[in-house]
Length: 251
Image (cartoon, rainbow, N blue to C red):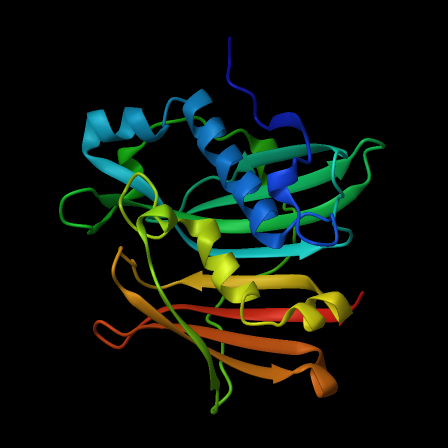
């Protein structure tokens, strides 16, 4: 059987996916999208186990944008679709849709992935992975360019967080969706009650390991532009672990 151009699966929003308002957390939406990436690459013969065994490489996400029109609620049925674009020299572009039971889109996302050598962490060419990319893959969930995020000149320290073992994934670095939790923890519960994120772009710039301390810096321009900028700095070597740009609206 030929692998599907798109992978689509249905889920029900579980207790662990929601926050105090019984709506899906942004980190949960990202986690579902990323999990579907793994399932789809497995179906296409380029999953994490196959590429590890064949080439000694692993998938790494470098950039992602998520647009949310409505946050699904506890026990709601949702459907998630994902598909790959034809690769560039080093980059793989992947798209996602989240829909409700009536087929209405609640969230969209686009992402960029690369493959890295497990031992050296060096970038490897996309041509290592052989798979078919049907023409219909050219559809995009969001018509945008995932470019460099231009941060404001001055950001204020929001908090610091030491990374623990519960934060990491099978590659022993900070899980991709955990970065989203770090970002949303920059806001108080009162701010979460008043505002919601309608769009997020995150650029993953460096690996973070257990024992590393991340300093979260934030610039809040909600009153003027409905924008929030966040930067995570790894205090081990003062390197930037990620940058993020958020669009905020009233709940």
